[in-house]
Amino acid sequence: MGRKASKATDNIYYISRIKAAKENDIYTSREKAALKLGIERSRLARIELDQIEPYAEEVDIMATAYNAPHLCTDYCDNICPIGIHKLEEQAKHTEPDSIERLVLRFLSSSQCMNDLSKILVNITQDGVIDKTEIHDLQDVFKAMDSVSENIEAIRFWIMSDPVLRSYFNDDAR
Image (tube, rainbow, N blue to C red; front, side, top):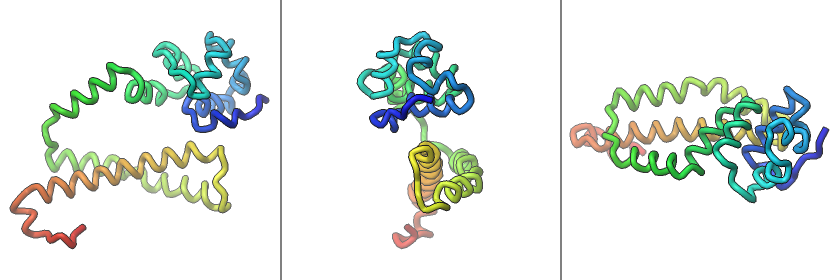
């Protein structure tokens, strides 16, 4: 098995390759993975070490090979200029959500709280969070952030309504 790349441990592409290696030994080393992916080994290393940004085609290849579709989403949201621009434009032109939509979004995001609680217990039960558990912990934090954002959106909607706001005081926060 390949050595752990200590400088790449928080890189999304490295983490995805290492997770894929649990299912397929070919991804245990960067050299073997590069051959399988059709990406030059040194380029894959530079991607995993955050020295360069991958091309969209490379992200697509890695996402498929590693069974990690979140790589494409991350690329589109954070690297691709078109994706970033579209998100910014969408945010500018989005109508305020209805309370029904906000509640549905909250319910959707909070449905997984039991599973997240179990994951948190599994991660923390030994009192040590090791490097293999970091990605799961990051996923838990993202989910918790989503629930918090939805709660805040509902609170904002209620407090933006003058009639409803009169039923709440500043201590409600």
